[in-house]
Image (cartoon, rainbow, N blue to C red; front, side, top):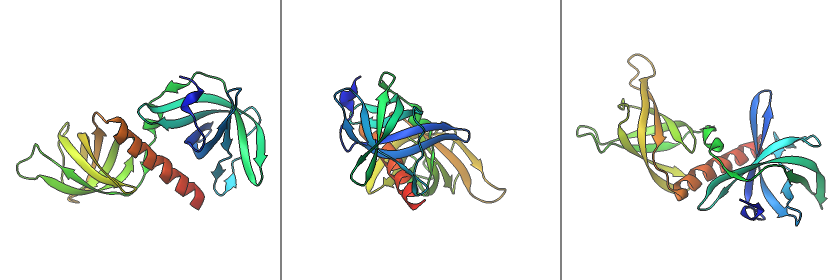
Length: 214
């Protein structure tokens, strides 16, 4: 893979290892130089520009239509300015790779969802509320216990896009005795590129909104 995967105005994330874990900063690509360097808008964190150190190592992530999530390692060379806009010049120091790492990040979020259960005869659908979501699965509160490895279909609205996802049950555990609520985790099965794009795009966008509010 080469720098042709990146283009102006493309949404990207910078992932930084800190002593509290990985910090994910959403921003966008401004330009790819002839020398193969990336120029991105400097991201905000809690209402302020994030204070990158010179030569700081970070990971750059983005979504490519039909390919999925790609990433590479970069070094922060210096800050630039375009009028009032602060930019970062990033030098790529690794190959560009297709990655699954972004799937491990789970976004806490409350989403109304419907679970369809074609393998049941007594109960065919239930209403659920999500607790978090990733590109690999979802954790929900359900009014009924689902069976381990049961195949279901999850219907949910992600920023105005209705998706219907084939899923399997990882676990469904009663939250409190006689509470009639279950902590249920689903794994998404055989996501196609468009479904993955919608889910990860939702996560990117929600992170961006939250950082602006922060």
